[in-house]
Amino acid sequence: MIKVAIIDDEILARKVLEEYCSKIDNFTLVLSTGNPLEFINFVQQNRVDLIFLDIEMPELSGLEILSALLNPPKVILTTAYSEYALKSYDYGVVDYLLKPVKIERFLKAVNKVSAKERVLPTEDTGNQELQIKHDGLPIGIPFQSILYIQSFGNYLKIFTDSRMYLISETLVNITTVLPDSFQRTHKSYIVNLERVSKATRTHLYVENNTIPISAMYKVAVSDKIAALAKS
Image 1 (spheres, rainbow, N blue to C red):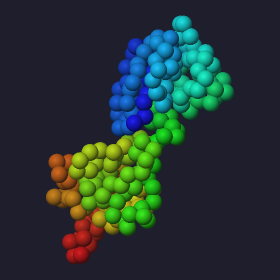
Image 2 (cartoon, helix red, strand yellow):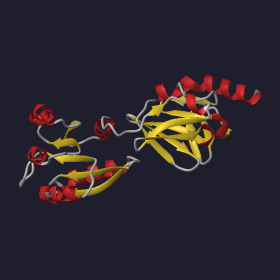
Image 3 (cartoon, rainbow, N blue to C red):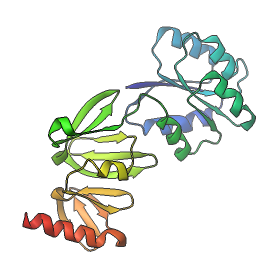
Image 4 (tube, rainbow, N blue to C red):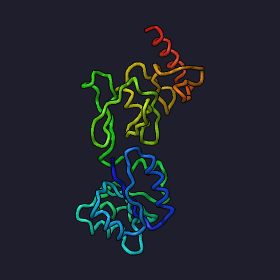
């Protein structure tokens, strides 16, 4: 897991980042505070992998905090003032977020964190599993366990029988490593057709989930279902 800390003297800004962080599967929020000194004391005794750090704070600025840390973790700076943008990169930060932070921009920043999940080639698994990186380690998801895949900003949600995985990837790229039983049904969805329990002209039903079929993919979905039925 990636251990995350939020340092911001604005309560509402912290709450927004806390909510966003809760959407990232491999994030664990270990500290959320408006007190820079509390963070400095905490990081001396505890592991922190990534911090969301406000620049303008009463006691110490975010840049002063970075200067005080000998081995700072990865940093995403947050501020309401755009004039700090260029200066912030002198400190080797991952990214710079301008308040109010939008979820799309948050995900783009998180995508730059090096300890992220990526889809890997599947040659070594005999094409029986989808290989991803999870917490920096490769794991395999059996294709037959995947129900469907949904795009989520710059991420994909992979829904399986047991859980949901959030990875940094695109639908276009992941299609190249999926077997023929998977079909794009919509700009935001890929479905494992072998797991479909019912199909209509506009929707597929997978377990308790209803997946839309857009006009663009209607013929392709119909043809693929027919081909699988014959095989």
